[in-house]
Length: 356
Image 1: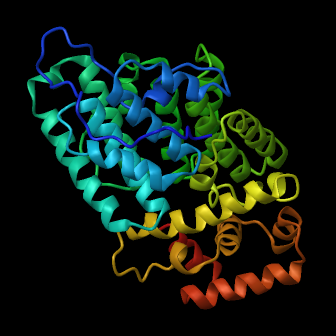
Image 2: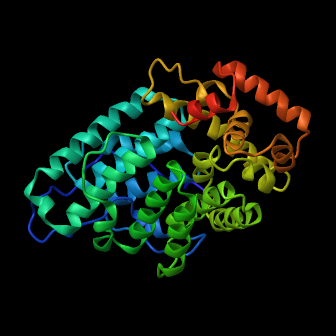
Image 3: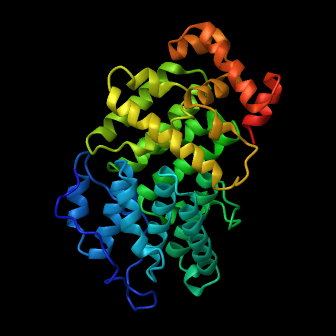
């Protein structure tokens, strides 16, 4: 799906902040924009700015699982003076680097992004609502999705109204994700479901993310059939453009849904997602735990992680076995391995460990 004649860029057409009448552009063009499923590359090629096209193409590469290409393209824009290019490039570079095991690169780009956000918050430009809203969005995205210390006290929900529709929808994904992290699954389900229903147009990327976080909320509420329906809605939406990385990002939190829905029907894509999840989860945690005694994502297999998540949420071994299509004896073997790997002796200790 990657054009054979695509050449990787060096930034040369970036706009410098401060020029009069320069339009304010939101970060992440593919999240912000409305395009039909299957027409992502057509949208990318329609962009008139060469630099915007390059960074948006890198965003596309990340979503289809070509993290190395996404890294090479965005590297030229990490120090850009254009806020749109810099912020978008930094986040793509961070996630793509984690997906390829380059933690040092992710930390480098994260430091640039945090410096950019602090500078923006202290500038006169932050008085413009559209600029402020993007700064708040980026800060919350890095806090919730990367577990970074919060850089703003501003609630994201107060600034959503200034964002484009696609960014509003993705903001609801961030809010729902945050709720899931503190076990407010009913609230997360409500936010994601309503956001999808009321957002006009077809914003493919944020809708995929919202449906995935809704599936996560639903599986934690034991609504397995509903969770699988939301997951498959996200999958069908993603297939048209070959988007696969969102599923790798959420693989562990989906607690066996990927296996149930894709393993037999889409074996190649399932293996790609599973392999990507193993790398991403290990290095995502390493972003903040250099000397991790925390072995949850670095030592457990992706199957063991899913079982540990369900076991600490009061699923019985029999229920886990039925959900993951394995024997009860196999589940108990995995649980024994989990206890040994993490050095815990009870469900209570395991629950405490999983919440770290």
